[in-house]
Image (cartoon, rainbow, N blue to C red; front, top):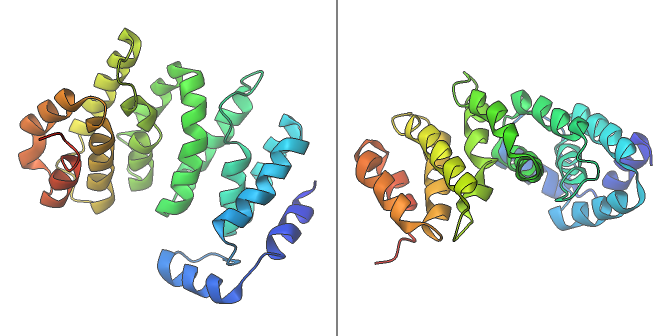
Length: 227
């Protein structure tokens, strides 16, 4: 599977009308093919199954560099895998290298899902993510919370998981006065997901910081809290 093969396979699923709608929706100047996400999933699932890791990393790099919307989504999906043996640092390094390119939520979220798997595999990588929280680039700051969403999921976290959860909540606390909608939304998303599994920590955070959050974010963060 070469880069040209992958682009040809994506282009074969193109829908120009959908492409126009996507361009209008995402409002970022790049090429859109108009491929439905389930169709991209089918293609990438086959590529992941048949390509070795080195080939997947190289293909993902080329797809990302094309700056085609669906190609960037496919690049992220190529590297979305819970277990990679060995957990090659090349995958994590490539995902990290994409973060400064983030310019829309859809592409960023797909890349962050791939990154979540690598963080769970090696939580020491949180040290790298922490540096993102003070970056000037809004999408990098947002990514620090999206990529760490797995730490909202445990009902009974280990000591290490609880410590990581508190660490990330500390990052979120530095975001609560941010004027940017996407940053506020990322805090709300993290807390909303946390509330399903750790309502006490969520309530404590909102009690301390809720009044400084945007009203929509405060409402969303507490929307799933038990009465």
